Image (cartoon, rainbow, N blue to C red; front, side):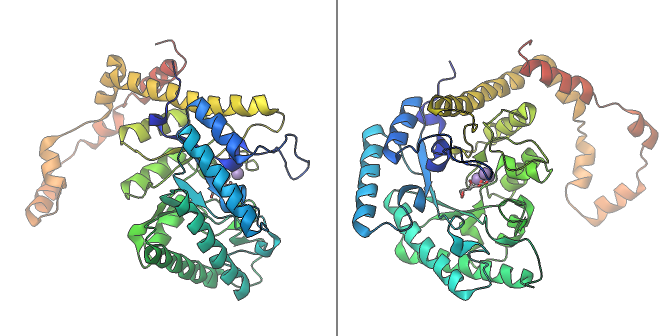
Length: 386
Ligand code: GCO
Ligand code: MN
Ligand code: MN
Ligand code: MN
């Protein structure tokens, strides 16, 4: 049936289905949708939650009374339709004040304003029940490095994250923070461009346990990297706090395509990885309908993201139960108990025994592991002929 329910934990951002189709060359092609109407439609489609930037809900120049009204109406819609807000984040990229960075601006006044704005946005997120707070540093980067701030930027960024982690604790918010790396766009080069960079940076923070990753399919793909490989490393580090699902052609501008629209096989192995490892956080679709579409296309897009995920989840289950695939997999992975005993842990005896041992190097080089057949079986399963 592939009809989602809240138990599947699918989420969208107000900015995703609400995207009016503006691009650098053209005006919006769709009318804006109000936050309560988005909540109603998403709930009708079986989503679990909706995420937001502060300014997706409250305009940056809203007066206090207007803010309160917008928040009240949004909360009413959430409770009427049973949707939650698992994640919140700050818009630190649209306003011209952030044109040369927020936490990494060379202007101390901008850095302070970024902290001010983020604290207020964390207050809003907490009020809405969010438990994960995302940092996507879209403007944190450069086009030219003549400003000489590369090392300063990292320490400004670190100081800001440390400050905000303490703020969260002092307020009793107890957020988990998720860094979202992206290689470029809107900046020529964004700081902490990949999953690996963010993981390395987290280790330098005051409270590394509070920080994890929000990896995005399109972002690693833009960098020419494998998203499943990146996510595996995040899982291995115990840092998969959130995930942004979409699709992307490599070597292009940031496309935010519908999940599974482009790299179906990669999407399959990603879903399999998430399901096999028991990831139980939200599956967030950070994508939007094509600019060509009207509002009907927006809801077809949202339904499509969730359906494709569910279809791939079912395919992953079939893959795990397919006798021929499992036999090919077992043949691929050669185990040897005796060698495992020698190599699993260093001891002087193990080292000596390993050094004395002789290996049939030529046989090892001759062996074909059967990956062509295993991959073809996978393709045929995905194409629906198994
Ligand atoms: C992008 C990013 C953003 C962030 C969002 C939440 O490419 O524009 O993916 O959509 O995910 O700002 O932090
Ligand atoms: Mn993105
Ligand atoms: Mn994007
Ligand atoms: Mn994203």
